[in-house]
Amino acid sequence: MDIWALQIPIPLALAVVAALGYLFGRRTRFSNNNLLFRSQRELRRAQLVAGELEKIVCTVQKKLGKHHASISRFKERVEQLGTERQETAWEDLEREVEVILKPTLQLANQIAGAHDEIRRQSANLMAFTEVRTDPLTGVNNRRVLNDTLDAQFALTTRYGTRFSLAMFDIDHFKKINDKEGHVFGDRMLQDLAKLFDECVRETDVVVRYGGEEFVVVMPQTDLQGAGIFAERLRAEVERRMALTVSGGVAESLDGDTKDSLIARADNALYDAKAAGRNRIFRDDDEHAEVVVEEETGTTG
Image (cartoon, rainbow, N blue to C red; front, side, top):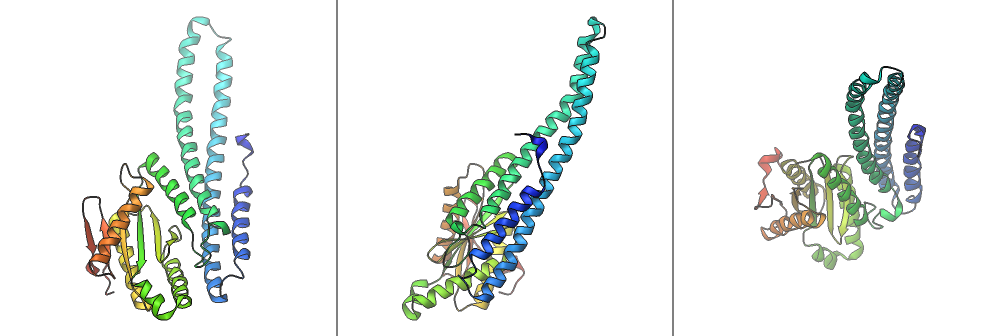
């Protein structure tokens, strides 16, 4: 592949095509109000992805262009050395190599970082496609969760960045279905998914994990920040809907896998249920504790 042939419009076009395909493919599935809200949010997300890809490509092009000039000067100097006295040519070559080596290594690290970032943005683009969407609620499905966690763990391995995961479950959902019927229950799932989608950051990923369970992945968020978010979201659900949710929060740790991180969040969720429901617990791998209202500064 000719790395000098990179063009900025390519990633931008991919983002636009993905966004448009997503929007038109979903037109008949949801109500007009829900579609309008999701269309606006997904367009903002598509613009964010396009902007990030544009910055990556521009940065790489700039770095490659600068290094290309350095390589050209190095090549000319090496050719000159061939015409100079043989006894000094080796020492001069060592000096020239030292001059070019440092920026070359820096460029290698920068390209590696760009590769990781492109991989993360590619996962964001794939989240727009229909096969990666839960058909009932319209949020992401477990395939997106797997790809998102893969990307986040790759960033953690390379750069040591942390992220967190929150798992939510509707309290007494079976009773809701038994009392009000499954049509009403489905509508509650759709409304809850819309609320989650509305409240999270554009960089967060909302997933319907299964049944009445939802997961939110929060990049560059520690355990305390994730607990604050989850508690505020729990309070917002209680305020705006005729149901409550319980939640469990976990932060990625050294040695974690997708399964271990999800299991820790699930254990915290179980503790929240056992403690009476309608509350958030967080698990730091040593013990689980409730996230209290005072930590968030909200009144619930």
